[in-house]
Image 1 (cartoon, rainbow, N blue to C red):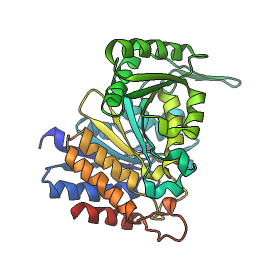
Image 2: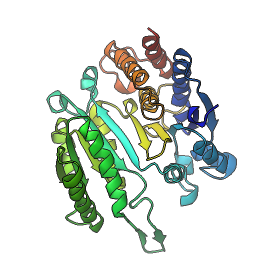
Image 3: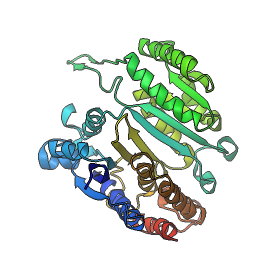
Length: 356
């Protein structure tokens, strides 16, 4: 079987295995329904990998990842691993996968299902029409910089090179061109030298290559405020690694729950990594109540971006929408006296709409 048809599933920790099990059901259904010829494989990652191998990203997992065309990842981390040395922490697996696979662009959409308006953190009039996409630079910045610590001080080095900024800006601007032609670049150029480089490079690229795209520069603190005060004004937001990490979690609450939203991590190559934006949620792990929509939505992104199956991706996204529109609710998005479905039941409702 061709390498391009291998999908690696990394369930990880906490609720990761629960939502990945449901995503696998959906992927198998799509595989059979459309005769895609996919080969599904599994590997260890995160804290569960550390417990079995002593490493959060074992060599075998990395080998499988490089031999796959796409990766589905559940979640990593948990309090039982909080005191491990930095290089052994579960989160290092994510950084390792992004770096080794050169996945420099993280796409995180935030779209409001009108039926979930009451679940949003904001008033309905603030979020009406919400449909934004945050593009986060994923392999540079402070997360990958040199780290030092002694008894009385610590430091984390933040470095960006011009080529890293150029490629993420081009990536985001091209997405803006097929959406609403608006790009907002978020930085901290009034304080940070890396942000001044970011803004200079962005200005140059946009003026020379994307004249038709409206560009706006906003400082990160103002962007955080505007996401609350006028979120529907945004189309595509592009920003550096740490700012993107924070702003995407903020934006997720606009749509009602982190459990609803998927993400894709992409690069110039064929391999993509797809995961819900939520964490391992150890407080609900094992209870069967996690919302699978973000994970299943990540399957749709996988179909679109790694397998070029746009019609199948749209049908899966419509099945999620139909389930929500017709009242299917997990605990995190339920209001009033709505019936609450468990993880497996929610998945079944979605697959029922998919096969209609």
